[in-house]
Image (cartoon, rainbow, N blue to C red; front, side):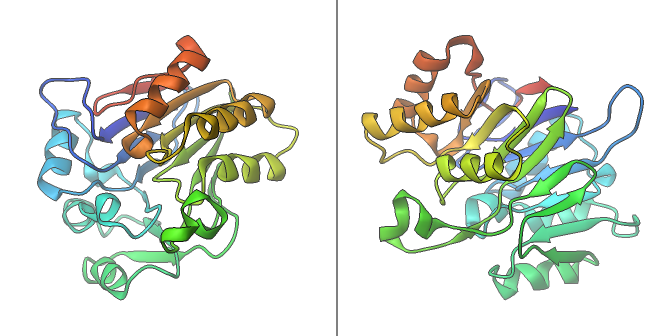
Length: 253
């Protein structure tokens, strides 16, 4: 399986553009079988998103799964543009969203000739690829500033579970805890994406790291809205097992 960061606040390649938002591309193929071509979120700006896709040589027509974590502009901004570039005649292509998404998003998907599926609970959406279903931000630190429902992705790999968060409004600690509760006997190989820890204190960040280690998380890659201070603490505590995120980062799992 190969994961490519397409859109992030940072970039690790000069020819790519950075911008506030997040997206990654996941090819679940292995040496002995073809897998799914999954797009997780679409960044904020369609022009930047498509430019990075082209530079990274990702063919939109191969995408068979689009997974949108939550209905915020920095994760949905490139959706209409990428749907225009995808093959709406490709069988079994599905856009996975939540019932709480706006009618504008749903109408955009339908107008481009695609089907969408509204995830209402923990679900296997492709072979060994799961949605947590809608988790509520009221369960996390940011409950005092309003609520939003968000889904995260989990992939079962030979190395263990990989958990991907868009912005992790429900709290990345709660997301990881949920996954561990569903799969208590499986190791968590990696957690990455936006951790939304800009307003976390050092003690709160350390509590999250402590939980990760108690649950056996082996590697992390904090991206997007995690915040520089939280990123630096993750680097300090995880060492070489904390990867640097940025557009152009490629991870083989």
